Length: 286
Image (tube, rainbow, N blue to C red; front, side, top):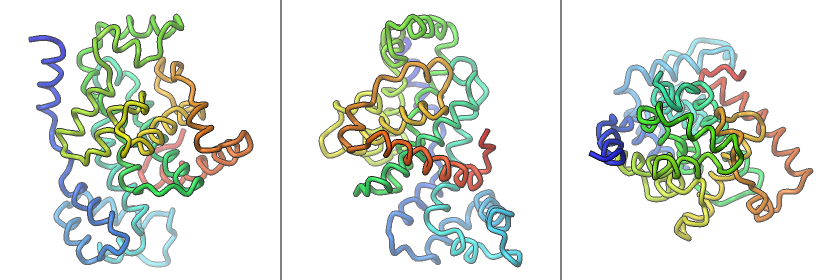
C-alpha cells in the first residue's frame, strides 16, 4: 500500500463530524431560525447542552440569576456565539490529539485554527463582504484539519520538511509536496468530503494555499480563508516552522483594498474578537 493509500484509509477511518453540530449549523444559517427548532436539535446532546448552560452562566455574561433552561440560554447567547461554541467544541477534539509529527504543536495548531476563523470573521465584517458567516467560520476553523491525519505519517519525514523551510527554498506547503507528494490541504479537502460538507467548504480547505486554483464561484471564500491564515500567522498565531513559511499575501490585501492604516485597525478588531471568542470557546488566549 502506498503512503497516499494509507492516508486515504486513515481519512476513511476518521469519525464523522458531529451530526448535532452539523444540523445546528444548518439551522443557524437561516437568519430567521426558530429557537424551538434549534433547541430540539441541541437537547439530544448532553455535553453540548451542558456547555451552553455553563457559558451562559459564566462571569463572561454576568447575568443576575442562574439560567437552567436550554431554550433561555440559546436566546441569551444568540447565533454568533452559539456558532462559535458549537464549532469550536467539535473542532478542538479533532485538533488536540497528542500524536507525533505536526501535532507536537497541537496547542499551537488549535490556537492557529481559532485565530484564522476569528480573522476571517473580522475581514468579512470590516470589508462588508457578502459571504455566509457559517460557511466562512467553518472553512477557516478547519482549514488545517489535514495536518491531524498527516501527523501520524510524517514523524519520520518532518525534519526533512523543516530543513527545506528553514533553508528558505520552499514554503511549508511546497516542502510537503516535495517530501510527501501531496500536502495537508489536499488531505483536508478529502476529510471535508468525508464529512459531507458543502462544496464551498471543501474547496476553501483544499485550496487555502492556492486560492487561484479554486472554482470561480468559491474563489472569494477561498481567498478569505487564505488571507486569514496568513494574517493569523502575522499576528503571532502560527504553528512552529509552518508559521515561518507563509507566502506573501500582498495581492489579496490589495484586492480587498486594505491599507497600512486599515491593517492596524484590522489587527485591533481581531484582538478584541479573539479575546471574546477564546472566552466563548473556553480557551486560554496566551
